[in-house]
Image 1: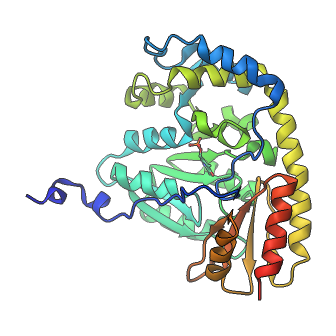
Image 2 (image 1 turned 120 degrees about the horizontal axis):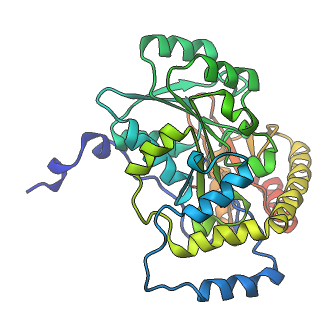
Length: 353
Ligand SMILES: *Cc1c(COP(=O)(O)O)cnc(C)c1O
């Protein structure tokens, strides 16, 4: 028997999402916080983990934690859902709205999981290219919704990999005009300082995503969805009962207890980002784009496939987006520590033709 005859077409058609998993001494590909947890917190963190009763199931739905974060976000407890990373929350959203013929609108290029998760859930994907400034092409998006209103629209704000926040007027026009759910993914909030949270109660279709992954807790998989109570109520039926393991729940609480320490790290990274940007600007043939995130997207006057490979040979991993069209010879580098950024800049200068 051919096992593939049992698999959905949408799944067969995909290539597995490749993440480079070799160990690189300078790892600047995944937009992680380059800093470990501050030394003075580690003892408390491990004591907390070791007191977790591993023989018991975790609290289903993390209610106490959701209440704490709701308070921190300034919204109601019934407006928050916690997931195993925002990736899981994207999957729950897609699963819940995937009625026959339902569509997800995705401005591209953007975060790859929107498309992958939508397709796996059985949603049709309407990929609408961004304009020449990597901002939303409202005219093209309006044309598409007139033909087929999307159940879900994904807006990463700031966008990954381009680093910019789409203009606020365009995002707000979408929120006003669109009949479906509009997901504003604020994964890089700690670096942009920009949020639609204060607008939250003015839009019935707005869903905001946040994560602790980019601010120091990538390994723990902790994400947040903030949405209207009626939606959160339905999504809760799709969520697996024990979606957030006990260690992640404890880690999320620990983050809140010690948030200033992690916000200080984010502030330090913003400083390094500005230094890295300035250094990249001085390299001929390298064109960094303004960024609101903890990474820099840049176009090059040379073949990035070759440069990407040569950086890897030197133990430096970044992300290469080279593809025909707007992404030709574009790469993305995560802001590392000062030392990592220096190694990257020196290697790049050395390699480029
Ligand atoms: C990194 C990233 C995420 C991933 O979040 P997790 O909480 O780690 O699942 C979500 N959205 C965007 C735009 C990202 O770049």
